[in-house]
Image (cartoon, rainbow, N blue to C red; front, side, top):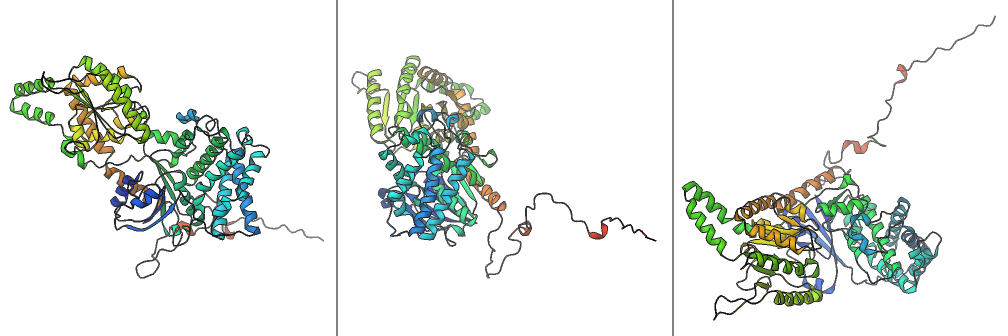
Length: 592
């Protein structure tokens, strides 16, 4: 099978978002061929280069989303008229889309129910306009100059001033129109690419978009031009991200851009053969945004469990089993009493930023220290940007205020019970080593998507205490303790209960490791996508003759029902031969 993998800012670039799971997927499906179509997000990403590609990647084509290259295409009068018509229709769909108050109140989108669903009329209008622009770009060689032109801004202004436009659109001023037109130009750059040819995306058997939004746009066009089926994976719903961004923009800008991304998402969900959320949290968002439940297939991300196998099995539980068989229960109880006397360690590992709520963790640790003196807290992670640097400084100051430095003796150097460390610090400690050195792993976030760090702790067989955000409950199941977010007291009580009960920690750690190996391994992820690919292609009629190695058509490559005209799945009346039809004999009247 030949698969067109569509990415935005990810694979095959080094350090690209989502590139790790794409690389694992491509390497796991070594019996298929992959054509990678990638959008880059900046010059620095392109300068960093690509990861090492496996041999099953036959072609890589890239395009920048951060810069538009002039194509030198000059449209004639007829082409300009077509552009004005289609772009005006697209703008009219944005101005009249029945998008709920999400765009004007981004905070309301924190709940999935706040996402509005565009009406059928606006969705059809948007899809027809999008396809019309794509056909124009294919016929004329590109739309770069047209999307930059004053003609586009005037068409957007007419749509905002037309009767029936929403109030937020009618209030748009010239700076707002220029901002929206610039964003639409960047979002519609994929229409001008030369990817939509018979030897391009028309040659693949299936398009797989690694995310929604702009990355799925080439897949929509491949389906429109060639009938190629589309599969879309969303480990984080892009529409929700667009609802929560640009809080400083005017209501008109937020409303129009939210309408555009909402209509693009609705068209993607409608055209896709299958939608693949990475967890139940993303699945609920997709359903609220208009996804058909029959198309949804949840496939959890796959993580490599090999680096954590060394510390995965709890040594103390193994020693207990062996000791009970040998009758050495008393020795094991004395050993456990010594371990209880040693200081416990709480471990937090992740990216330092305000969403991780380390302030609540520090206040909770103050209560843990009051109940279990000698307990230590390790915060291991790097700050995320300038905001993360400032937040890390605030947390260091708070830790120094809450906890005094302690020394083992009068001549020893004191140290704070809270340590802030960076990964790969002293002794080149790995993530597995960090989890292995802790008693309990803690997650204190107020916003979380799919908690990969929590799964790593589960691979290590660690007992965990987490806040109930994102997909945490789905990942943990019944193998860890979950508390409400922004509740230091509940977080402290859960940690203390595990610190005082080593047997419970061992049971939860073993159950967590078994659950992680069953649900979140690379093997399950690759196997699920292999089956989904085969199911998608099996439901798609053959679009061209399949040739063998000698160039001869392969028999049975196309299903027999593909040659039956009309809707062959619908029951049709059975044809009855003429000789079986009873016809009344004509009555002749004799006239004398």
